[in-house]
Length: 254
Image (tube, rainbow, N blue to C red; front, side, top):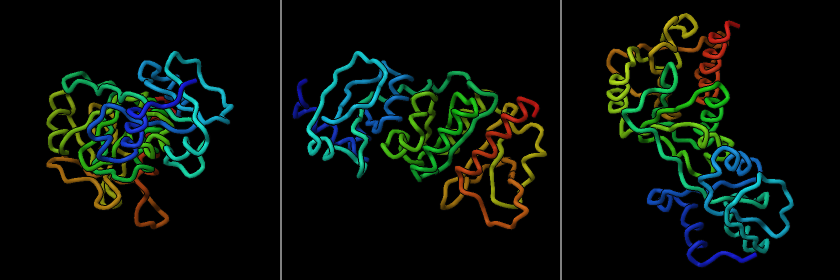
């Protein structure tokens, strides 16, 4: 089995950095679970599979170029300290066309969610809750950074991700697609979300970033998760889980 070419190795190393990813339509997916999920979901996107010499895990059958490297060489290419011995080079999925119809009854929007762990966990939760898409504004982390992919367990390859330069631009597009109400999450002071009958009906729910929360929007309705214990706020990934599974509960009339 041949090793990496110099061109391939340079490309892989460049994708570990933000600037390298920004100018590329490729990304890296590392770890047995994440690679298995990505290969099952989008085998058409796989460009290269790289294995450490001692890797013995079971991966989905794949008709793609595969290389096996000595441990020291392989580990030098990995972002994680203790690698599982496998990573894949994939094309980033094409985003939905701006004019394409919404795939869900509501738009789940992330505004400046900059932490890769939170962003990835939200994508994983959105997939688990049955969403087809997630919308996000500039200022959020890169969905195809390695840390985000690990946190999402490769869920970005199962979702349509719609990115916009600003929350205002995103809102304009949503209105053209029939969104009638915007709900802005806030730690306190908003209406209790459990009482909002139209929360998931031709609407958008905006989750804010860790530092400053959701951006302001004219005519948006502020909603909050009731917290009788008196905590100041919830982590954005935790709050997203509560809201998304409230949608599941209502759909299944639990």
